[in-house]
Image (cartoon, rainbow, N blue to C red; front, side):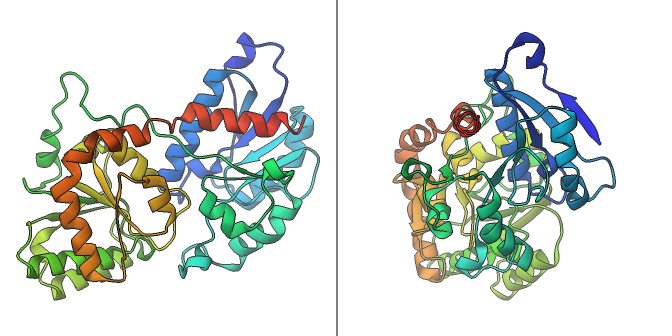
Length: 362
């Protein structure tokens, strides 16, 4: 096991609580979005210095379950108040407080990914055993049906934030358009579909909407699907072929993290039509970049996007096509609203919420 101690310990010798943070979600196979959220949250917590942070990482080759099983001993040996889990799973036995994070309940929305018995177990019985439960959106809170902290319950809704690197204007000496050549993208409106290589992301609904737009002789767009080659992606590329969209699809693979803000600024639209999400971080990142989003009506993504976002019914290709067309036509006029909508979502605020959770357990 690798253990790294926060540098704030030397600067703040009288910190009220010493908390272990399980950083397993920063390792594969967790999504890039979860990894960004965990790393950004920890950076903000360490910068604030209200808690003494002990970063806990499993040794190479150690399974998450085996790693969690050792948390009780770590609490004792390292004099921790408890363990903060950025996922729903945590150590079932041993001393110390347990804070659990529930990202989503996909089975409530007809999604099979992460809907196995293990995820269902932790979202039901796990919430009874945890001392506190955190989720990032009120939609997921409603799915859980637990009493909220303000009603003397254990469930806290703490929204995620957005990194400063996602901004409307590129830094000095940075030319975003260079990325078009880097990833062989055409100079036409880009629909940036981040990580849409999994069935959950519902790329098929976007493709049917684009096909409808083509039939209408609407604007010519390029669908850019980021992420590794997967069986689900190949299935959707087969659908694109059937719909006559092959030349309108780009699959640049995994995008370098440093290039993502620039691609967000270059995109005309970021569709997030997933069947289920816990918060939809790309929605905030797009808005902070001044880029419009398209989300399903009534979804977590739509809640994160707020009024400036564009919304549709993913099951209706006509509605998706309307959403794309409206976004291409109106996004520039909403640009300042998009940026303003994302502004309150900071990792500083996320860190503050987590600090309050732990202080309530002292």
